[in-house]
Length: 237
Image 1 (cartoon, rainbow, N blue to C red):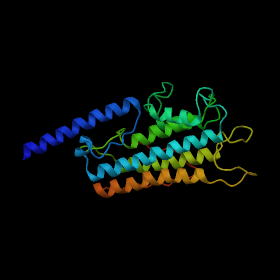
Image 2: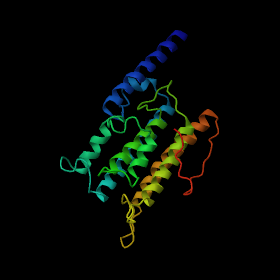
Image 3: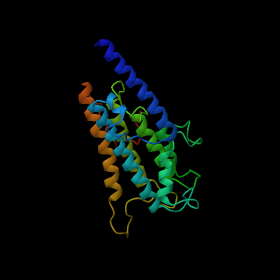
Image 4: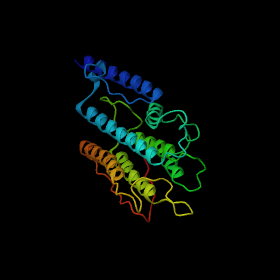
């Protein structure tokens, strides 16, 4: 019986390594069919983690679409494809596809996107690339989860606070003329639009919910941090 358990665990480990390698090569987040052999190595908790991760990526993808529709100028591939095609292509690529940002910390990529001195025409791309890289780091860059795969609830919690900081920067950072670097929610004189806040709120809630689940599972207390406008410091992941 012990030998059988060992073989099952070893098989699960190999499946995890293989599927993670394939997923990282093409940037696709797996949603394996229930009949797949890979599901043999998954616990209920593993599936809960995957559901949260897919929800986070879905919300982030929707945010990218909305930001491009709100800020069509400067999109790097506007002449080549539609917004939806551009977003799908971005999320089909690995986190390290863009060599100009590959050696840079995820949160620093977010800062670059929302810094007035940034020289690129497309601010949406680095913002989403940075957020995606940061969120995936909170999942230890795994795209599938098995019995021997673990993640840290504190990293998930920190990622939620970092999303809050990014949302504040998105709503407040302006150029020398007082114009927002990226438009999201409605500005003065426009019809009130809170859809961006709702979408970002869902993204934060997804990370926070899973952080609490993982903390309860491990019996570890989360170190709570309060995000204030006076101290926009990203937390480590």
